[in-house]
Image (cartoon, rainbow, N blue to C red; front, side, top):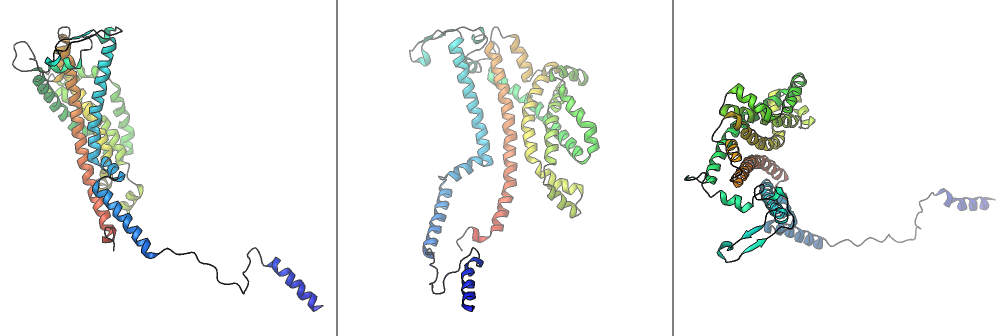
Length: 377
């Protein structure tokens, strides 16, 4: 009876043992996986580190190339190349449109080579005629001709002087408008009541067309540069106000809470947290405002009675369009280049500012990493 009971216990033991089975007592040790050679691992890591350093130093690695184009200087170069590519594409489309729909092309003795070229476009459109749409090389050539008959100054030098006059007025309005925008944004961020009271009027002010507003400003401020500056201020302060207000609210709430826990004043929080965080937003608005200030200055020079700017040149050459359409197109070209020049100045200032911000951050990361990050110790 005892033997039967012991046999029953032995038979039921595997059921109570659970899903995990135990190895027999006479089994040998479990086989171990072959471990990698420590010297081989060190050699592989050394080769990988040397390859990375060689790729970065030589500049041939993909990461080095991407990093170079992603740097502030690389982004500035990309902006310049984008403008060049844009003008090339516009020029090709311009001449292709005239080649298909414009007036016949007749050129004798091209560049003194003795070659003649005659082309009759297969289609005709009045918008592509030489009067409505001159050739690009004709516009470039007229810049070297006298601005007026028997005049010593060329059209190019005259337009450069007019562009500098317009740009100087736009620069003054741009600076004043940027300061007003930053001031309004700072007030709105620190006072919800002021934001609810005045922000709708700031937005509504941009609903009035500047062409309709310019004569009113000129009549109120008087004819001259003052009206031009006011119009440039008017077109500058709005994008700066909106973008700067968003930038001042962009810091991490934990950073603001940390500053408050340290009993920092509103001025300290504004100067050390909010203002640095708003710099990218500010430069984005300034790039838009730079082009808008040029447009506002050109528009304001007409009713303002300014005689030395691009606005007056556009009016004069528009009256002479039948006899010389290339002069008006050349003036439009110089006006667009003036806006691009102002944009690139702001872009360079942005690159310099961001590089100064990135350099302390990279130095801090390098010091935090310690000497072991650069050496093999």
